[in-house]
Length: 343
Image (cartoon, rainbow, N blue to C red):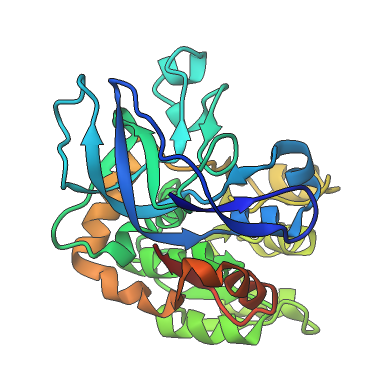
């Protein structure tokens, strides 16, 4: 089969090659991939940052966002069948650690992620445990099925705190931050402000449903945010960027008694005045990892069945597998947001 591989360490080194079609076990399914999404994680692997150097073992088929059709199912698989349209949860869990036994599969101690710890979906075929496979409803098109993973990250982040009738500040307008705008609006948020340095992404944020999109590097940003939210700051902050300056701004401007959800991953340790920025402000701060399995997937289904078109502006390009490096270059130049591969 044709596959896209991180062929060797270093920046770039993304190549199209031929490899064997996976052989499934009795509890697996073989999926023929139709569409796949390039994720920020894939871009990290392309860029070969410190995380990639420590985690990725080339050669590796990358990619973990997809929609496809089941080609064959293992002998023990009774709830899925050949020809069925599916996506899948890319975090494969152990079902044995304390987190899994407590029902918190999304923070499994021994998680293995497709396209990171094992071969991923940027290929013509993918082997997945049947327990991870999510059937796609007929009304949900492949282009939406292929982004269930990042949409689920956004859904999980928005859902950890109530947003209905509350003022929301979203830090970072990458694809997940943009999805969060549509979801927060869907869930009844009042005012939504987005902070994003890139003008192209700010324009998309406004199309998605933000009330205002600001450049955090302009002078007086903190005061401007607080004033916009009636002099108190936002009730809810969703930090999606991981940028140290953005995280510090978020803690500075959030209203007392507010709810903070952190999804973005900072590149290094951050110094934070915990006494004045968390304790004395009475904040509730929650870290968000992955998607709740499978509550988040059900929430995404309901959202897509009624509001799928609201996220169309986030999908800026669809390209062929052979153009994969062009896709990464467009992301590097901030000329694209969510790029889909037609496999």
